[in-house]
Amino acid sequence: MDKILIVDDEEDIRVALKRVLSREGYQIELAESASEAIQRISSGEPFSVVISDILMSGMSGIDFTKFIAEKQINLPVILITGNPNLSSAESAIRYHAFEYISKPVDRTQILSVVKRALEVKNQKDSDLEKLMLSEKLEKALRTQNLDLNRQNAAILNATSDAVITIDSKLTIVSANKASFEMFRFHTPLDLIGQSVHLLFTENKMQKYMAQVSKVLSEEENKSTLQLSDVTLLRSDLTTFLADIAICSYSLDGDTYYTGVIRDVTQKKVMVEQLIHSERRAFLSVVAASIGHEINNSLTAIQGFVEMASRENADTMLKDRALKVTLNQTEKLRALTSNLLQLGKSLKSNNEQSKTLNLNKEISAVLQVFKETAKLKYCHIKREETSEEIPIQMNSDQFALLLSNILLNAADATNNIGTIEISTYQDKRYSHLIVSDDGEGMSPETLDKIYEPYFTTKELGKGTGLGMFVVKQIVDNFDIQLEILSSPGQGSKFHFIFPKLLET
View (tube, helix red, strand yellow):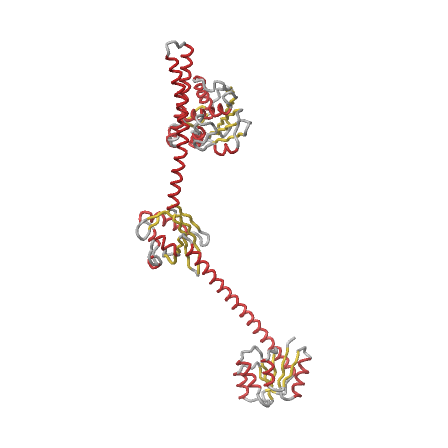
């Protein structure tokens, strides 16, 4: 409920105004003098409107209005007087009295003026509340931004990565502490305000700036670019390798680009050292494995040749020595083929490719195995067919591919199992499937099957090059290879050759 204070030194006037206003639902308080009214307001008593006579004993209504104006209190003051004159009216205007009314006071008039005064006061109170809330929010945001700026500055200066910001004219506008250390600038002015070209070597400038320009042309706030192994230039003209992440954003109507630069020189050195160590480690294993393979073959050849060379050697022993020599020589040839395959390129393989008949090539490989007595105790299950299934490939490469698969299948069956070979052609592809009933492979073995020099065989029983060479060949000729295998269930190698281009 709105509370109105009536100030007048005449009791009849106070009572009459109270009767009129209280009937409208207002809460009315009375004061006999301006001094009493000031005292009650100063003590914190809240009022919505004050109706005050001008001429009173002691302090006047004008003096009271002046007090309210000087204290900047949002309290409308309606002045009434029985002796209106120009001087009092001017004073009322000067001290921002809400209204100036002459006696006798009309009921309708006073109610209308009070209503308008309350509306004005309420609006000013609402505006003031909004202003205070706005000022609080602004102060909170300033404090938050200040804290964020301090945090960001601390983070930027704590990181070992260089953080550099440029504007749309490619001028460096800010850089953190690590930037000066990374690029070996002595003072900020050596870097800030300079063109970003300062950080690139002349022969790499065009390449990298073309990539940076890609970011500049993209939509703001959505553009990011990752550059790896970028050659950057220090102030002392030395260079280093870095990875750079670049983003763009808009600030106060201007576009800026910030790059986070990480020196990867030391990382590259460590990676090279690790690779070198790994090479030395597996070369030792490979040398031992290949050495055992060669020594075993040479020992067998030498032993049987020596026995066949004795004067008392019979024909059967000589024949056996000849077969062993041929078998071991073929084994060494296969080993050499695998080793030589590692150095062949995709281009050299494809240059020699031509249209082959898949079934005919399989028969040729099996004939070699038969003549050299390889897979002697394995059962090869294959239906002979004259059907032509075309593939685009190099004949020697196919022989090496199938030979490695067959030899692995023989080892998986301990050279006494069944190896099944089948082929077919659909509308899109030519297919070759080689299955065995051997020991199969675990998921762990399948994950590593293509790794060079990985083998599950004992030292001297295999080099781990077979499947690595197979992988090289299928990749070179765009052949798909699907392997199904599980322990105790054998293995299935499904080769899918690409469709030949129509001529």
